Length: 337
Image (cartoon, rainbow, N blue to C red; front, side, top):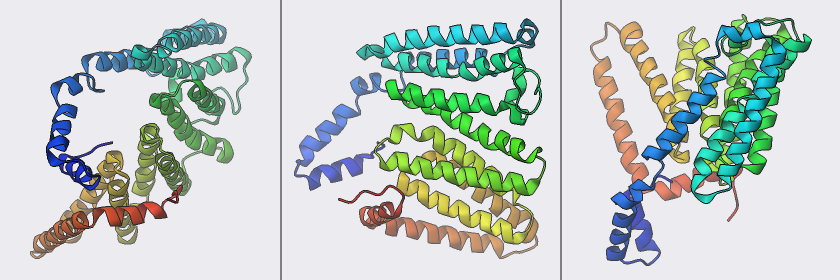
């Protein structure tokens, strides 16, 4: 949870804790000793950096020299990598002080799954829609033959999460779902150059991922929802950008951005507000430089709108708990009591 000092002291007062004790507890929680054990430490940065180097080595930075070694070599090597990483990760995860590096290594093992499936398909020439080329194309080339790799990645993530409760394991699942929505469209329609199809698929996937993320939040699994929020937001705002064709659709884009901004405040999800603010800034820039480029009054109108937003923020602060509780009750997965 992200809790401000004023919120913490207010909550302590409501449950009967004296202000002196609450202030002392806050200082203890926010002091140097607590910071050393936090997630942003030298050891944690080293864990994640090393883990992403391993993942990158066998995914994004895979060299073309591997292609010449054949599918059998790629498949067997990826399986060995996955077994070693998963085994080492499991051993570390079971120890109390090394759960973070253990979870990261298990996540790296899951990222070996698409490479192993690619090698197997290349080895036996089992392509759904023809040979898509080298493995490096998986990350930028849209092709229906990648689907088995994405399905395998999602399944491996779910299985790994069953045994290792580590939030980063949702990354390969979210990544696989995003790619599956694109390559699955290619498999169904045979091509992916229709703007209308791209827009509808991206919007549908984005909405579905954000709803899934809200459900994860409401099921008290907030730390697991970051990656699904991120890829959902990328797809949603990417799909809306394709709609940027006339003033009506651009206005809808701005309204959706405002809604997402309010949703991010209620859900306390910064990843959503980043996309929403960028979208609104883009729309305001469009109004300023395209629609009202010759208007003298436009800056004054924006100032009035800004003051209105500030006033709304003050009003919301005074009734934050009541408004937030009512809005949360309307979201999917709401709990009674």
